[in-house]
Length: 465
Picture 1 (spheres, rainbow, N blue to C red):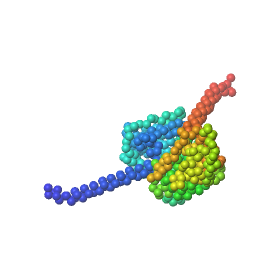
Picture 2: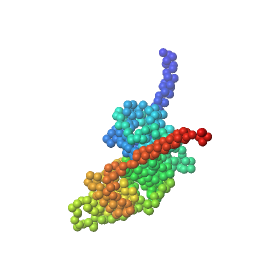
Picture 3: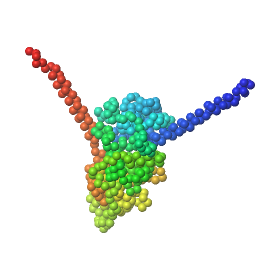
Picture 4: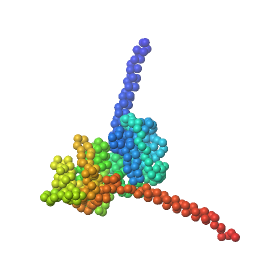
C-alpha cells in the first residue's frame, strides 16, 4: 500500500499524459470530419448521389448522357449497399482513378478526371467524412445498363490511358496563393470543366477548349473563359462571387438548371475566400471566342413595352395564334413588368442585359420557360413557375422569339420543333450508332487484312514449277 501511495503522483502524471493525446485526437477527428464535409460540399457530391426525395448520398439519381442513362451509386458507409467496406486506398482509387473496390471501372459521369487533382490530405478527409460523418443507408439503386459497347466497363481502361491525367494538382509558383487555390478548386473539387468544357466523339473533354462551354443533358453550360463577348471577360470578380454565392449577378445572369443546383447545394456554402479564389482564377482562363458573339452576351436589349400596342386589340380565338406580346402580357408581365425591367425589389431580374435572352444558343431560355426556376440561397431564393403544362410548343416558340427580339439577341431563333425536343428530354443522340458503325468498320478492315495475309501465304512463289 505504501508503495502504491508513493507512486500515485507518477500514476497521475501518466494518466494526464495518456488523457491529453486522447482529447487531442477527439478534436482532430472532429476537425477532420468537418473538413471532409466541407470538401464534399465543394465537390457537390450530394447533387448526383441523391435521388429526388431520397436519402443523402444513397444514390439512385438518373444522369442522362449521350450514351444512355447512368444511375448514381450509394456512397453512404453501408456495408451492404454502399462503400462501407472500402479501404482508404480503394476509396482513393475510386475518387482519383475511377476504379471501384471490385476492380471495375467507373464511367466519367463521375468526375474522377477532375478529382484526380485532389491532394492526399483532401482525399483522406473525404474518406473520414464518408465513413464516419454520413448516415448509412441500406438501399441499393438499380444498376447502370448502357447499350453495347459502352456496357463493357473494361473499355474504360483504354479510355483512361488516353484521357486521364493522374497527376495531382501542382501549384504554379509564378502565381499567387489565391490564384492557385482557385485553380485547385476549379480544376479539381468544383470540377467546372466537367460541364463547361466541350467533349469530343469519345466523350473526353477537349483540353484545347477548356471552359469554352459544354452540354449537361439538354442544358447548355456556357463559356466561362475570359473572353469579353462569349465568356465572362466583362464580369468583375465581385460579379462572379455574387453569382456563385447568391445565384445571380445583377445586370448579368441568374442560375438555372444544373447550375442552380450547384449554387444551392455547393457553391453558396463555400468560404468567401474560396469564392474569391475561384473568381480570381476564372478571370485568367485563356479566352475562347465564338465569332457569332459580336457583343457581350449580357449586353443585348433594352426596356420595351410591347403590351401598350395590344390594348384594344381583340385576342384571337385560337390561342395558338396569339402574338408574342399577347403571350408575354398573359404569362410574364405580372412579374417581369410590361417593359421587361423585372420586379421593383430586384428579386426578379430584367429580361434585357441578361444572358438568358442574349445567347445565340436558346436551349436554356426554352428550358426555363418549360420548367421554371426553383432554388434557395440563405433566406432568399427564386420561384419562377414553369409553363410546360400551360403553353404548347408553338406558343413557347412564339413567346421565346418575342423575348429575344425585344430584350435579347435578335439573331437568336426558337422553333416549335426545338421546344418539342427539349420538352421530351432533348434530341436523341447518335453517338451509340456512330461508335457501333466505327467498330464494324474496324472489324471489316481487320477481316480484309487477315484474308489478304492468308491469300499471300498460299500463293506459290515465283521459283516453284
